[in-house]
Structure formats: C-alpha cells, structure tokens
Image (cartoon, rainbow, N blue to C red; front, side, top):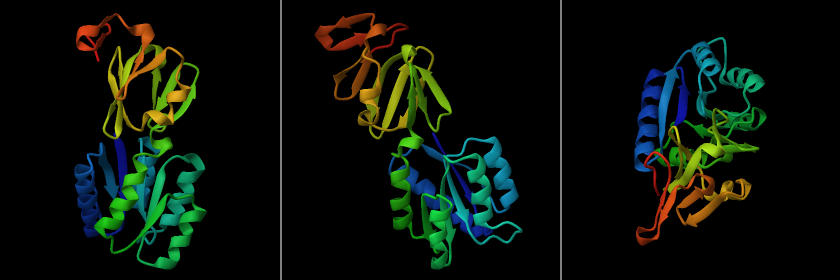
Length: 220
C-alpha cells in the first residue's frame, strides 16, 4: 500500500486533489491511499517524521512561516526516499523541483489528465517497490518491509503488483519480475509466466492439475 500525503493551505484545493487522486487510484487499480492531508506545514513535518510516506504533494506558496521549499529542504535532510511533487500557481517556481530532488511538479489549476500522467510512473519506480537485496533478505516498499527469502513460498504476478506469499503472511508491492529476478537466490525458479517458486519450500507437485504444494495448504 502506497501512502500519499497532501499539503496545501487551501482546504478546497486539498479536497479537490484528494478526489482526483482517489479516482485515479480506482481507475488504474492502484493500491494506494491518502493517509494524511493538512494545510499547516508544521503538521505535515510532524506526520512525515513519524509515519511511512511514499509520495508527498506539496504546495510551494503556503500561508505560513514555512514555504513548500522549506519543508522539502527539511525533509531531504533526513529522508531522501519520499517522492515530492510540488504544486504551484506560478510556472517560474517549477525549476525549484530540481533543486530539492522532487519527482515532478504540477501547475495549478490541476488538470486530471496531467495528474494521472504524474501518478502512474510512481507506482512502478524501483524505490517504491523492491529497493535492495542483501543476502537472503528482500526489502520492499521503501525498505520498510523486510522479508526473509527462506520464508517465501512463491511470488505471483497480479497485474501491476507482485504478491509475496510467505509462511506468515502475503506482501504486495508494485513492481515486475524483471526488476529483481536475476538477483534472487538460485533456489527460486520461474515455473510459469506469472509465478516464481522457492524450490526449497515445495512439499509436493501434482502434474495432473499443474499445482505446486507448500506447507499450510498453500499452493500455486
């Protein structure tokens, strides 16, 4: 689940942006939610410091002692992984996006089609999905979910998502096999266009119905 946070000093603008984003999530079957929105930049800074945030929409001109640029600068000192998308009513401010290592910028009034063009690439960016491999550990979702590869039964491709089925739970992330298939341990085998299995955890194989069995009644 990707977490989106919105900051704009205009409450009507916040509500409109929220509705546009939610419609894009539904239309494109994106597993994401607007976890927090606020007009006070200090509230945003506190939330970002204490919660998982993947994408931050940040208005540059805020009716506050802090500008959007100030907030971006403070966030970048401690978190380089959040994708910041600037909102501005002045096109000349768009160049600031590069200074603060933002992902994109949107000029107000926001157009639904332009917003969708901005959102769709974020769900397939490596740092929002599989960000690193270290020995037998797999890091997902901005390094906040760590899975022991030995615990994985299989990995299933489900549209734009990958589902990691383990002995404890299922974990979903937006990515593709091609992003990390070559980095998996040798005991992981692509047995189908939509499945990669951990051969070490196979309990049985039923050729008659093309089914691979694992512990706890798991199968693929």
